[in-house]
Image (cartoon, rainbow, N blue to C red; front, side):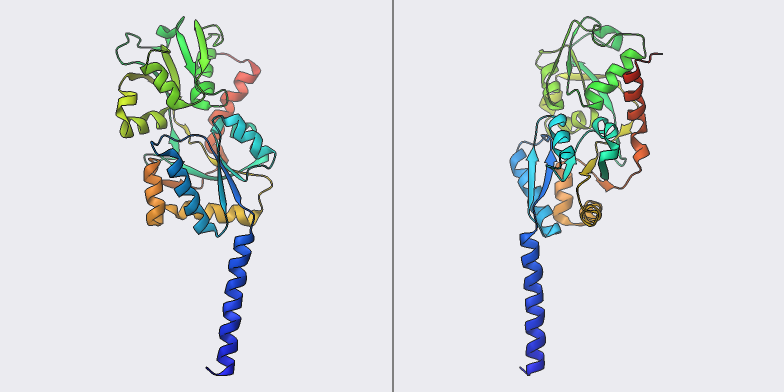
Length: 285
């Protein structure tokens, strides 16, 4: 090999090695999620983390928490870089979080809240639930807490005294199970979760029936901590947008029962923000 060619080869090899070394030494991306609805949940999360690692060229650590508040606190303290949270905590902290991408479900970046009862119950309307045992999903959930409380409040009802008793299940699948197993007369749940379980594990939703569907709301978004560098924020947006174009990425989306991710305006969540503001002000009617 001529000396000039050999030098060029060595230069290119060393440059590539430097890039690989820099990538391997990059700090891990810390990605927070709440439990998903898969039988092999841990296996899925590990596959998603490995896919993200290959795309980003840096380690990815998936951090799983059962409550939105735990994820939110970690994001606000800079202990997480990226999180998949509900639209309700997002609108409360828009100035401290960056909207990265929004999942698309059934062709839209939207979902509905469902009120569910037991399949064999004679309960048919929200009015029938007065004095009953009711399950909330999470106090930081739009579909599992904010929306049903807003619905009651704007109907002139006190959500803290409308039901005989309430309790938190800390998860939409758990709320569905609570109603199906007779532990609650009714619950407010994420319609995407209910529809996904109905498709993947129909035995879990077969014991429930939807009696009310909310208007459409912005789908729970992927958000970044304010401490995340702009360059990495842009790279993550590009990556999630392109996930559907990658065979393994599409398979991961299919496991989540999602179509793709898209970039949306913050105004997608204005309806949730308005509900939160009205409830905070104690407004009715």
